[in-house]
Image (cartoon, rainbow, N blue to C red; front, side, top):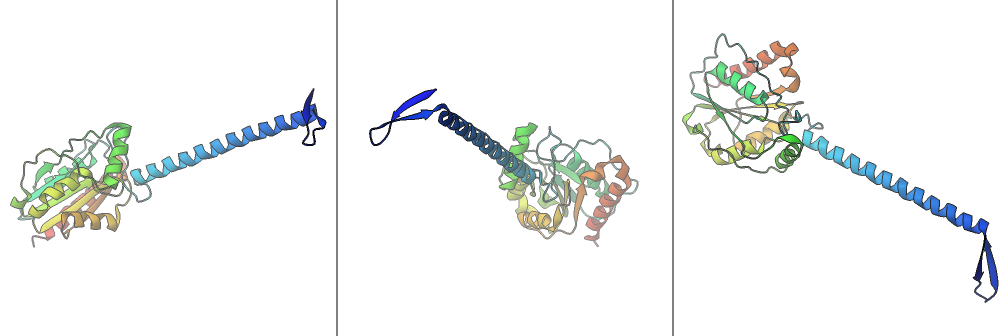
Length: 254
């Protein structure tokens, strides 16, 4: 195949099929490069999504995970309750306040309350946080320290000698529901306040420091209950952790 063209000097010239084939091959190379560039962009986007998920899950900071259905929390639903044979004597009027998306934080709260003979107040978030998108939004809200709308609470923390605050760790932070509760009631907390958290990995000193600053308290005791502690194989370890925490809470009355 021949294509007739006119040169710059006005003379006729010829571009034969070999030259055209070179253009076709070059065009193919351009297409391959575009595909390669697109693949690289998609991979980079995928890594960015993974990075965001790592932050939201709290994997880098040992924070809580989701069970895939209950929001940005590692609160896997468990029905077991600690057998309290002998409550810890405090001589104090105690209130346990907690938020829980799936069950684990509730479990710890109720076990601590049983040991201390305490009243219990659950802070309920009115925002829907179930499902995958609920999980993403919840992690984002916690990371950006957003507030939320909570249901009215029934108990006044100012009427108690000791308040125990519990929350799952979402993206390295307390939940929006707990943050909202503290904004509304931090000024009514007693001097004696203890803190606990449920997390996939260690919540760390930084988490409890931020938790305490938000509550404007100096905690008398802190406790992190990890995901692994809810395994049936670690029942004794879980019981020991919660009992020791309750004992430390009782120490403030002496």
